[in-house]
Amino acid sequence: MSKNEPFKFGTLTQRWPLPRLSGLQRTLLLFVVLPLLVLTALGIRFGLEQANQFQQQRLKNDLELISRAISIPIGTALGENDRQAIELALGSVFVLGEVYGASVFDVNGVRLASAGVTESDLTRTKIPDLIVTTGQSQQGFSQVGGRHLFSHFMPLFDVGGNIQGLIQITRRASDFGRALDQLTIIAWAAWGLLGLTIICAVMLGHYGGVGRHVDKLLAHMQQVAQGDHSHRAAREGPTEVAALATGLNHMLDSIEQARREVDGHRAAETALLAQLKDNEKMAAIGGMARGVAHELGAPLSVIDGRTHRLQRSSANDSPQQREFAAIRAQVARLTSTVKQLLDYSRPAAATLRKTDPAQLTATAIDAITPEFEQTAIALQSQYETDLPALFGDPARLELALLNLLRNALQAASSKVTVGLEYQDQHLLISVSDDGPGLPETNREKLMEPFYTTKPPGEGTGLGLAIVQTIVEEHGGELLLSNHPDGGCRASMRLPIHKEASV
Image (cartoon, rainbow, N blue to C red; front, side, top):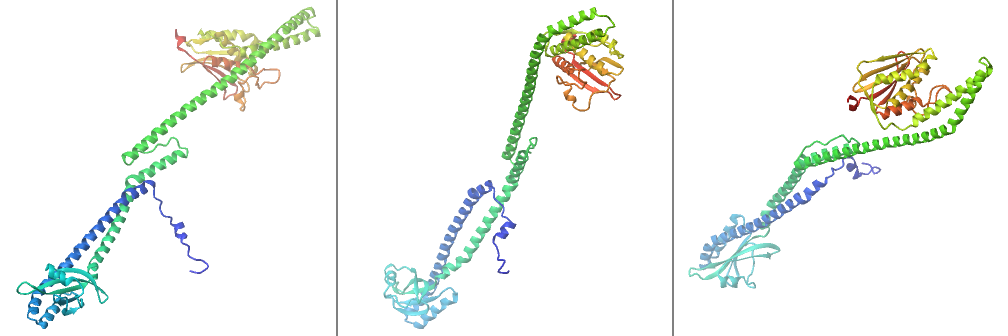
């Protein structure tokens, strides 16, 4: 590795990021695994202390057994003042391989014989006095020649049972700790392995039993958060997680129900606003129509009357006769426009009654026949037999049908057809022509007031608006379409109410 590119400790972390623990995993580690590891560590420590005490006691007992084993021959040799036998007996303890030194002292603490590392003089200690006084063995740690030793002192008795000296058996103090070093290493290694096993078991158990189901639940929630409000969580995993999924689904169902209710309220509000605008428009048109009728009605009548008198007083073939006829035609057109405004702004009828659709159609045809007779357009009718009765306002329905017939008359090339048919609890009153048909664009504007596709002077744009208003008063709908062979078909689809059958 060059000095220009030193090793960066963060590189491994960036490439292989450590897995992040979830809150539940941290809780398990903190409140379950950690107390368990602490308890096991305390147990191991207590066990090692007990094992250390047991081991020390066992080593002390071994020294005591060795002291007892050589006390008899050394006591006999000391009574006979046989130094060679004493040294031979002291040398025999090293055969066991656990003794670091052995010595024989008199009752005053003067060393008589020794082998290995022991105290050289006990005259300045209290050990001889304690042994003589109590007649019991003594033990303790001491420093001898810079070495830390453990010594066991045992009294030597003569044949009469009197203490004639004492034996010191020593061994290194490290022997007491060495025996437990390996056990301590094994114990703490086992504790570490146990801790790692517990952590792995808890993490894997958490993921297998809870974690993966929580992750799935979070994925479901994320999918809902991204806009998929129809998605629902699967009920999987433990009872608690499944209960959370159920609660989430109930909450989503409630939100979806509330959303549908809000959408319904919004749609109703939109419809009410549209109806309010229509009512405002109708009120404005009604006010305008009343003003027009009031301001123009009387003058138009006066103009038409005086023009009619002048027309009668002039010769039939005079130029004035044609001028008077043109004036009366324009007055009639203005009068018709005022009448259409009044028809459009007129409020819906308050009372409905049983109406025969065939009779209604026949009345409308009779009323408009003179207009057809002035043109080359043929008027035809096609009825089904045994048609049910309508429950509506005959005058308003006749007005709607007359407007459809006039529109068809103005657009037809050779004929207009009126049809009656019964479909799915509805009566269909249709008017068809063989004219150019409806435009492909702006069809939705055809039923708006004052919108017309006719040339100037040939229409006010109120005919279809009046028809739609009357049809909506009866709970029906106005349908506009083009024939495949050409021409337009306008149909009033009116519901057959139960009251119509009485």
